[in-house]
Each structure stands twice: as C-alpha cells, then as structure tokens.
Image (cartoon, rainbow, N blue to C red; front, side, top):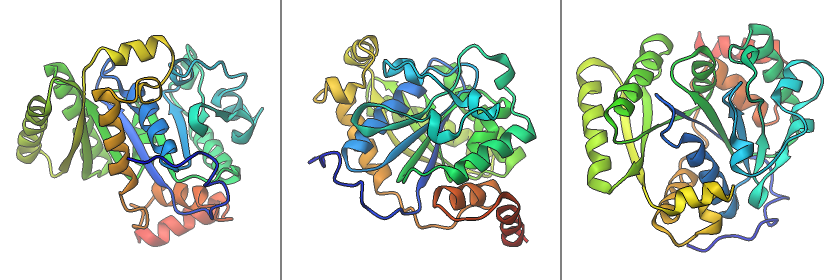
Amino acid sequence: MPLQPMGETSNRPAAQPKVIAVTSGKGGVGKTNVVANLAVALSRMGQRVLILDADLGLGNLDVLFGMVPEFTLEHVLLGQKSLSEVTIEGPCGVRILPTSSGREQLTRLTAEQQLILQAEFDRLEESVDVLLIDTGAGIGSNVLYFTTMAREIVVVASPEPTSITDAYAVMKVLSKRHGERRFRLLVNMARGDSEAREVYRKLNLVADRFLDIMITYIGYIPKDDYLPMAVCEQRAVVECFPQTRSSLSFVRLAQTIKDWPSDGGPKGGVQLLWRMMLSGAPASIPAAQAACERREG
C-alpha cells in the first residue's frame, strides 16, 4: 500500500474529524501499543493524527514513543498551560497530548476540569483528521467520560478469558448507563484469525442475549516477537519492523479506519460539543451545550 510522504497534507482545509476512543476492560491487553501503531500508520497514510493520552494518572504513551514531555494535561487542568502549549510531536508527525504518571488526583476529573478541557479544545489550533483517545482500562469515571465523548468506540480484548469477561463488562456499563449501542472489537495478541473470531463469537453471543448492542469485528493483531522488540526500542513496530505480520495488520486496520465515514451526525450531548470544537466552530461552551440540548430535544 503506497504511503504518502509527510508534509503534503499541511495545507488541506480542516474536515470533520473522526473521534475514536480506544478502550479495554483490563490492563495488559496492549491497548496503548495499538493506539501508538495506529497513529503512526494513519499518519503515514496522510492523515493528521492527534492522540489524547486519557489514562490520567498512569499515562505512558510518551514512554512508548521514547519522549519526555516538559508539560502535560495536568498543567492544562491547573490553568497553567493551553493544549497547544503541551502538545508534542511524535514520530511521522503524530501529535500527542501527554498526561502525567503517578498523579492520583487526576484519576477522577471534576466537572470544572471537564469544562476546562472542553474549552481548551475549542482553542486548539491543530487541524485534525483523526483524534485517537487512549483511555485507561476498566470502568472508572474517567474511562467512561472519555469513551462517551467519541463517535467510535474500539474495545481491545485478548483471547484470555479474563480479558473477554472484562471487555463485556465495559460494553455493559456503557450501554446500560450511557446508552451506547455500537462497539467495534479489535482482538490483540491472537494466534490467528480463527482464535480472534472465537473471541468475537463469545462476546457477541452473550451480548445478543443480555444487551441491546451491536458489536462489529474489525480484525486482529497477531502476537509476534517483533512487538516487544519495538517496545524495548521505544518505537512503533510499523516504523521499525514494517514487513512483520503485526505491522501489516496495523496498516490494514489503519486503512479500515481511514475509510470510515466522517460526515455522519454526532451522537448528541458531549459528542456534538467535541465535534464542534475539533471542527473549529467558534461556539462558546454555553452555546455548544445549548445546541446539544436543541438536538437532543
């Protein structure tokens, strides 16, 4: 698949971005690694990618890329810096909004902090094709808050029984408490397509029985020796080992995501607010919230 050179897209007009939350029921399933590699693969395809490291308190996306940010989202929430000032540039032009690690007070955003973050996105000057939100694992308030912001929710699971159970728990909470009905499933660290589809079959079976949701299988990332090697080098596997099975799977998945429509209407509520902000609409927070209420009414 031909990749566009970086720099050819900088003068394009801003389009409505794809806002994608990547989440998981438990840690250890490679969620952040998935986000990092998808971001690099999408960027090499000519997409303008921004990653929000939303694992507040335990963020490590910058570590995965071998970067040491001077400022983080903590400085934004404290009113000391803007999002533009803390955004750093990663490999292949990927832009990253880093968060702090080991800061317990950030693991539960207050309503005021949520509004600060939303207002800062209104002032962010970046042009974005894809916003990837790397959430924390589990069903904590921050995870649910950031996940419900996104138009697309990608749930990452591994073939381990505990991962499958916890992935179901995340979708259950999001559907029962927040009205989410559509999920996309990515199986990571699978030995092959048959094993990955078995994970999908199990989740879909129990969801059909107990939940009113739709789960779409979007593929799998095979477990190979090159992924941990790339992590040790603090680089994306698609960058340093581009011809491996895992790299080619990330590229295929990135192409799938690139082909997702970006002109559909938002789900409403916070989703409308964020899409207005990322699209550069000059709406204030109250005006955007009023628009949300009119749409939902």
